[in-house]
Length: 404
Image 1: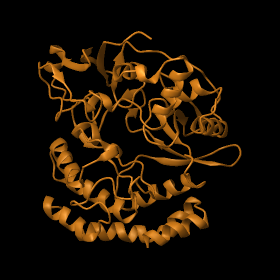
Image 2 (image 1 turned 90 degrees about the vertical axis):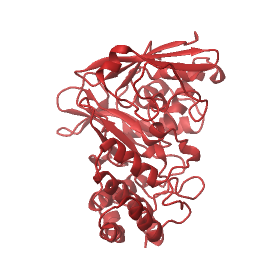
Image 3 (image 1 turned 45 degrees about the vertical axis):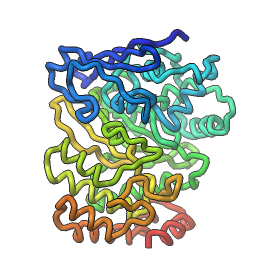
């Protein structure tokens, strides 16, 4: 594989497509410069770390291997990175020789959000029938380090994804219930969805648990996109969520809190206060504080400790309007170290009412007790949500002991 030294970055909003600038690799460093024409557009894709300027930018080595967070957000991690690595190995490419620039080229036009990269490195297309059980079986082989004859298909369907759990990007037709591999352009009646599959450490009813959390989050006043359970031919159940970075055949710019603030989500120092400040600066409205506070309450009381900075994102439309993205990846969880990944008023081990009230006071959140009470009352009804979602009695009991 030839060394990738120049990459052109573009942004695609569907009806608006613009070249943004160019990434250049030289002497072990990666540089970026905006094109003058894009600067004139006034579109700030990453206002904190990469503001519009004719400056020649160079990011530090940490936390993203010399990339700015704007571009690192396009790279797969977790399951997506595993698929890319396995694909590269299958083609005889040493992982030690693959640079961050080359990983962006492998992403090409298939990344999350609205950014695209060229020249793109194609890995070959493999179309398969979307049999969820078969995909789950082949994913298990990948996680166990075994060979699979669907590696190219799995990479095409999920190689640009983030998060630890296996997943695929699909086209879903709500009217017919038909699920297929993503097609560009999207046929009439279809929408972009993500379907998740269990990891090796997940309980068998993880999909039902996450669906119950989706229902609890809605009842707690938290914005989420549509989610549902997909039933396979064998009767197994998989959790699916509509993509909020797509609208039919249009794209929406997406930037994680990790990328915006250059926070290393694996060793995060972020507090919900940082997230509230970030939201206010982008949305320019005090209502942003309440959104983050309500989500903090939910994650604390619902024991979602995997609340790291890649699990919060912001969206910007073609009118340059920013907003906090709908919540995602809400489920009963422990982080790798047992603490909350994002601190609450400086506390990560066991934050509670005291720290939440301190957070609310620091940012002038109105009626914090009322918000906390609404969230706590909802989570107190965990058993009802869990039963309706088909969570097993064993999981209902296990989670209830922690929540209540």
